[in-house]
Image (cartoon, rainbow, N blue to C red; front, side, top):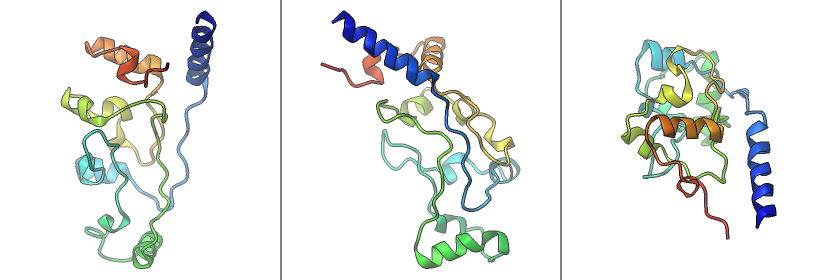
Length: 159
């Protein structure tokens, strides 16, 4: 039992030391500074949460065309993708590991802002991973906000 605990602790420490993913090239240039900053579009305009407990989604390409009516050279790939009904391959900037149970729902209900976990998105032309999503940082935030820190709150119990 002691050996199992030591191995589990080592795995957690190694996972936290692993470098976080950086911004990947996007298929079409997109400025959060313009959309969220200058135009003051709320995050949920494009990033919806389809079900309780689900991840926020990346918008469907056709949603962009509800405002962008004219095809320009900058938006040519977007218009072509919508016409062909072939979604663009948008890359997530940050993602929670699959072994973590995580939901925006309780965080938003507790008053957490998008900026708390994602940084000053409305000021950014191009997004990068600015806020650490390591377990130690999540636990520190939970403690600071009197939220549950029991392991089973975020991780599946192991037998």
